[in-house]
Image 1 (cartoon, one colour):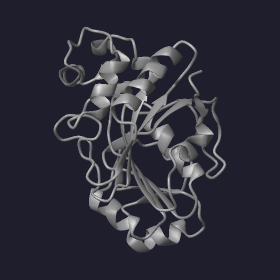
Image 2 (cartoon, helix red, strand yellow):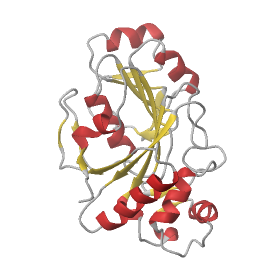
Image 3 (tube, one colour):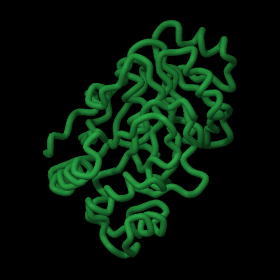
Length: 253
């Protein structure tokens, strides 16, 4: 399968350093990617969002609501990832301000943020007000579900008109690997709010059926911008998280 790696090797494949501010944007799978990185990185780690996510997506980790800097330092001292939100509003968790993430990045080893929404669609192009990416982000991870490739844009993509506009096609065409690469690398696409960090692409839900499309996508990105790493991930069955008592498995929003 096109060199797809286990989810447990994601941080290694992304070559993340000892002090990273990671923002995760794009299609479905972002929450699973966030928690996977939380399990794999070392040191003091804060997992958070700058938009909204499901109120149950802390996945059993210690939850901080509107924490002070002292709260963040105390909670991360043991080296176990914590989740920080502004508040819980019904079924939704409301994320923190980007400036909070920038400040915490000066206090802990890693901040990992879900910075975008996709209504569970595997691919998207951002609206003018998206994504919400803090200024100090070092790595922006754009997620695309392999199940978007080769499928009709209007059926599989969030904001299909924007996807089609960037890809220079109609929303009734199938999303080819070339179309996806164009959107991922476009200045008004995945990297739109990236200031000084690097872009990486994670392809989720890779299986035998999608592997040829994913291989084409990897080649397209390598030809256009070889410095952009692309990691293809085969998600694994649900299993307990080693560092929280929660679970990780198939992608959330």
